[in-house]
Length: 427
Length: 148
Image (cartoon, rainbow over all chains, first blue to last red; front, top):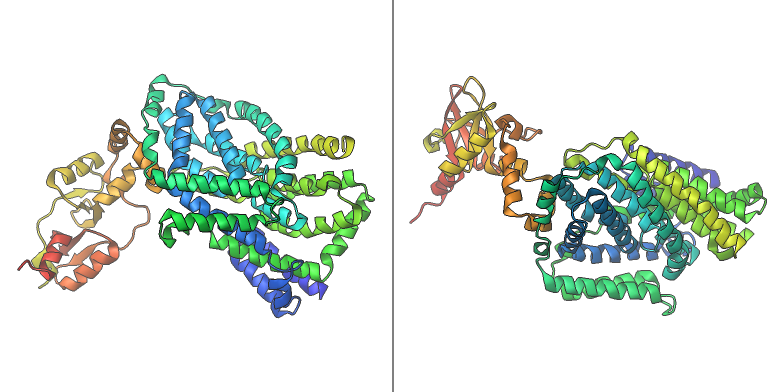
């Protein structure tokens, strides 16, 4: 049965990576075949905490998508971005810094795809008003979104999977990932100054065109902004306190979404607009396929193999997970990668120990930061390339890699001393 | 009643005409669109006013309502200035859908169905390869919903 499970899994994975058929069809088809072949049954797929669909992940994503959908209606992001550009007095590097920071911090609270969907249109407007090429700004933002999203449990879909598998809280992420992400952001801003230096053309007359934009007009429905902003604050407090309150983050997100829907006075079409049903179904299919590998013992065998290869040396295992995850997440989408690796890391942690959850942080940092390397490494990258193309700006694979590859390399390498010092030297 | 009976004379421009002048013609004559003809005078397609807006208004503004609200008058004027130096051909969508062109003997329902399918406020009516005129949506509605 193990061979059957591996063959089905690899076939579906190849289809997902090569995009020969839509990834949802590949994941759902793979899951269906796993069940039809008798590798897993309904009990394993839908009700088992170990091998079934991780409903915490699905409902956390659903809740946040609903909250973001309502928040998007308010125009607050456009308001913040234009205000920031005006405070930067239209100076291109300062504008890039403010947009990068705005994107990184927003990505820590919202998912990366939504964040870049919100920042990209306003970036195009500001850049074209300033007469600077928008592509470097768009690339800078999406890279910042993947870095910033790494800081929190809800910032990047791989983190949500890792938190659920590793039983990690919002605060665990904040305190372990937050400091290194802040450091990486500072280094990244320095890299931006160097990487995108040709884009910083300053024209006083064109700056006036940005200063004329009236950001206050972006907010049309102030009561909705107050309601959505209030719920987002409550949800964030709920995330911080969820382990103290013995509540899952998915419950916090769903409560927030329910409260917002109740008070926002919007139609289902409006508040469900941002819900990416494709993504949710894709996750469900992936969980069933990975669950099948767990059930037949493939994941357990692989983790034993990794333990043997590393000789039980946790530092070596952590660095290996970080680097391998970094490289592979640049080649394949980091969501299916982490969905597959998370149970393996869980087994490894059970077998060899996991001081300070270092193996989980290595996986999260590698997957989140490695996603920056190529335009297919993370969903947000694909979205930004698509927006640029729709507006007449082509970003080639190589152009993205030129910036993303270097940023991924530098940021991942900086994580090596962080993991070593924090979890081994000063543990 | 047939298409030729509903058709009214309508201004036409060539594919290589100046886009700005074509848009100004629409504005001056309060036209919902304009007929675009080949060099030999045979109709190529209809250029609706909404397609002119699609060209002028950047995609990122079309996709983001909040951005449309923050843009000032001067910036808006500059956007419309992007028509300068462009030809009518530049304004036409890349993916050519069904041409809203009917034959003189087509029934009124055929014209109405074509107009609905093509999302066009105008249908050009052609007879013997030359433009006879256009059926406007107003003429069509007038035919089916006469004022008592």
